[in-house]
Image 1 (cartoon, rainbow, N blue to C red):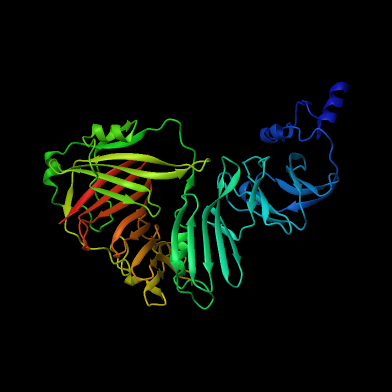
Image 2 (image 1 turned 120 degrees about the vertical axis):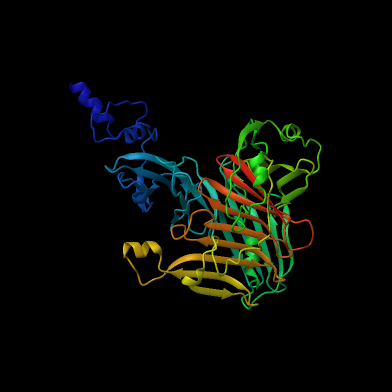
Length: 501
């Protein structure tokens, strides 16, 4: 018994390697026991001081009183370690940080976006910092060097350097596989001449190059448009599976009942989902196998849609004799080797719905479901040229009325943002409405327009995934010939198509 007591006392809080202690206290959780039994260092390290780090553990784990410090070692001079403690002050983890210079700046942004915010340490006078990922139980043992950035722009870190004549901005994305950051986009504005260059480094593309009008502060007059070219539609970093297959939705053969219903109008409004598509799912080993099996081998697509980076996003085939369609949609990612790759989703269509082109919904006065927004207060902001840039509707919501909890501040129930090219043609529109005030489907809808101001592509919300709309034009007119709807539903692209009369 005396020997057992000596061993327990020696093991408690010890940093010696290889000592296994049977913990009898019920208050020690299994997780904390597993971490504390992993010895931290073979030699005792002396610390001069510990700086508290205000990491938001309370928000993430209210029942687990973690605490974190940055400790200055006695040797070597200027070296620090992160020390993670449990609620009893026991060391759970020690992570070497190398030599740092005080005062340090700490930040806690969601960069890895897995278990919670991550810890960033920026030493005084340094243009770079250290990123430690919070992995749910402890921090990563290996730091990622990151730039000292101004703010997070979506999933990227934005840096800005500026003097009297030149403004330089860069977007960096985290390459988790290689444990480093990569330059994704670049911006260089010559303030005295208005010359602007926007680069897509990952595709080795120039997204824009030219002279732009500047305002009194030396920024582009149409700054919203150029910032969108610079910062939107960043790639997702994702490793490609070793074996890939193309999930495909095969439409059921056309029946007499569907023939009789071809004259109905499936959309009360252009984008509403008002009909289904009966079919079954299969998988193909390649694009060529899919097209061959569906009768479109060596065929020429009737329509192709490319995104802003010249990536093929949709290819659509059509057999006029049978009035059948076959298509593939592409979703692009980038892997740790900076190689771009695409997930493919196939589909066939045997039933073509027909209706008159009702025109695009005038969302400035009604929502996506045709609800009259005149019952709400309307606020409009305009561009310098007088075009609507931001439209907001606010008022008392139905849930407030039901609960009887009316507040003085009005709730925003619908918003629209417009982005225009320099020539005034509409480039992009963002739509949003309160899904609790109205319906959830298409509570957001993002619309892209060609250089003639015609809607060509839309992407919207649905609870099980996302909805896409491709508007296909055969001539220079404003009326599309077709609208193809793609319902991304649990790993499959389920299609419907309307032919406009």
